[in-house]
Amino acid sequence: MTNLQSDVRIIGDCSLIHKIARKRKVDRIIVAMEERRGKLPIEELLKCRMEGISVEEGIAFYESLTGKLLVEKTYPSFLIFSNGFAKSTYHRIVKAAVDYFLSSIGLIISLPIIALVALAIKIESPGPIFYRHERVGKDGKIFSFLKFRSMRDEAEKETGPVWATENDDRVTRVGKIIRKMRLDEIPQMINILRGEMSFIGPRPERSYFVEQLQNKIPFYEKRHGIKPGITGWAQIQYRYGASEGDALEKLKYDLFYIKNMSLLFDLIILFKTLRIVLFGNGAR
Image (cartoon, rainbow, N blue to C red; front, top):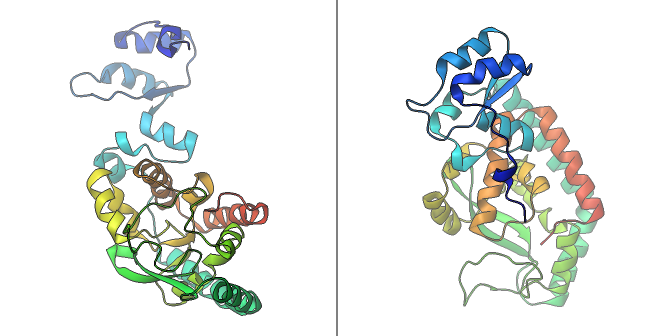
């Protein structure tokens, strides 16, 4: 395997930035220095900036390139001074109205499906039709999260809370079908009507895992600044989370959504989600 660093050609040091930028007709400079104190070539960058050359933060460039925030390298001042995180009253009102309307219509249209799924769950395995679990919502508030039960009853009685895995043997036959078709998520429209969730937002996590992740992943608690969602940017961009590493990757997408959230962005996520549901990808 070729060492990437050995293929990088060094054409000068920081004192030559302006000269090199002029010579090579550079139109953008990305600053991705981990340690800047006393090392940032301010004068050279100022000269470039005064000549109209764009100077960008490495973190901001990464964000625009990947659609996620580089959480491990992000510092609080970047989040404080960067653009985004705007949540106008108009946006809140319209988003809430759309959530209420879609969930009301969705539940009415889904009544025949709800009846069939409930009957299938009851016939196949003993236990309740619905899976109820405490999840962490907006501002860290705990709420009762609803889904159709897709696992054996009391699947975690002996093990306690564990991450879901691919081909999880706790999932029933009916559970595999409703997960693949996302039918197990239908009851969450009740959570939306209660004001606990939204159609679009970070997926709500169990408090057991939240306590662990907040101590290990920077800015993890910031995902609780908005209502959790049935689907979200992380859900359509990344596979189902089954570890702390996955939780970190999904947080990068969640923070990108929170930073750039808009009604148009919600619409894009909704259409992408529908496409995934139709092709049955990514369920677990």
